[in-house]
Length: 312
Image (cartoon, rainbow, N blue to C red):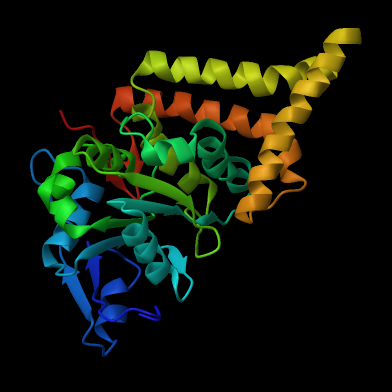
């Protein structure tokens, strides 16, 4: 509500059975720009997962020429939306996904959360992705997504990604398939988010979706193998090896730490001593990847007490 530089703004909040008093807080705010939608804590419609269904309901009630999807745990700077909408219009993008600065407090948060920004910064050539029509060159963060309304509705909205666990990346891919451009940008100066506040939330949050991130179990194992070889094996060689093996391991370890530190410094996240634990972070991520598949195959993935089940 405190966003600046916007001539027209409507804020629509969906309370889908939350237990933190969201509905009461919103209802107490006297502002004609604010609208509260309640309900949605019952069974989902056939073929839908929770996040896409929630976003679809919000979009149905919106009337603006630009839609801004923001998770409830995201904090925005006063001109965050104005600046992102200007980027969308001036550069001719149909979708822009600013990547918020990730706040990490507990030990597992500090190990795993920085890997979000590090992974897309280190593996996706963002400038190339902006001009490429290849859906595979897509990296988005559903915490903060800005999309042209006409394009959104033309491609089918969130119905086009109704059964996608990682719906943010799927939505960006759908935009590219539709023939439009999309971009992921560094949003650390305009937005921040603390996704999880406890160890069990970190585990549940990652395991509910990691199984779907790498195109099947073979892809997940390949990613684990690549990460462990590139960023954990050098540290092991540095500590346990001798002579040239130790020296080569030290160089590999230093390269991994440097890449982590550079990204953390750019995005405003904690750099030291956390970057030194990069091999441990990668090991933790690979462990979460395996747990995700184990839970998925057993049908036990949950989020905030609700089952997360793939839709066929």
